[in-house]
Structures are given as C-alpha cells and as structure tokens.
Length: 155
Image (cartoon, rainbow, N blue to C red; front, side, top):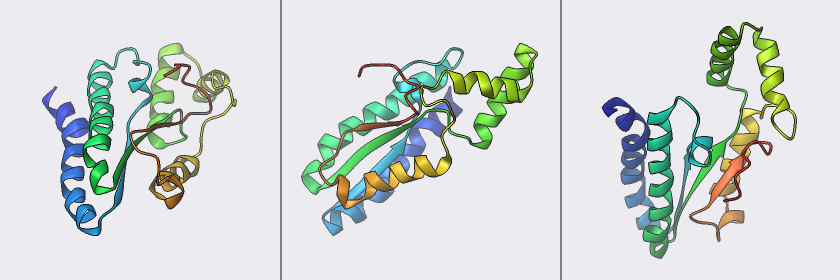
C-alpha cells in the first residue's frame, strides 16, 4: 500500500506543490493530472489503483476550487485503452490467461470500445494540450475522458 500511495498519490501532490508557487507568481496556470478509467469504473483486481486514483481525482477537484482565486486551473484526464507499452503488456498478460494470441486479445478489447479501436498516444496528448491551452481558460475541476466511448458511466 505504501509504495502504491507514494507512486500514485504522493507523486501528484509533490508535482503540484512544486508547480503552484511559480503559477501563482505569474498570476495563472494550468495543471492537468492523468488518472485512470478506474475513477469512473473500478477495475477488477486493482484495489490499490482504484482507491488511490480516486483519491487523485478528488485532489484534482478540490484543488480546482482552492486554486481558482489564483487563476490556476486543475483538471484531470482519463485514458481509455491507449496503445502504449503498458497496455500491450496488459494485453499479453490477459492473452496468456485466456489462452489466445495477443492479437485476438486486442481485437476483443477493441470490440468493447464504441469507436472500435485503441486510442493513439497522440490523441491523449492533444487532449492534454487542449486543457493547457487558452481555449480551455474557463475549464477547471473537469474530468476529460479520452476513451473512444469505453467508459459507460453517466457522471
């Protein structure tokens, strides 16, 4: 629990503590925190991640209100299945458990996504760029899902 706490929650707190003073001096800033789909839908067998990432989401929402008077916006991004090395690793693990090829596992996973494919890391990056940009100046405390429609929660 302690190492997961350090990795998932404390790292976000440390980053924010380092960034806020310079943003406050400039009179504005934007913090974008990546979390996980588990903040909307807990992922089976990932209790530590589910609990701690929900804490990061709560931190983001809390700081959005607390830092708003300093014109510092705080938002978080939720990735769906983005084609990263980590997702590939998870697909390999799941394919072995199911006795299927990695390609078949990826095909099955993609079929559960309304847009029918994994996201590209650049798509996730562009969503972050948007939240950092002036186009998002009136957005704070928001959760932006970059998931191809995978997460079905209403809120």
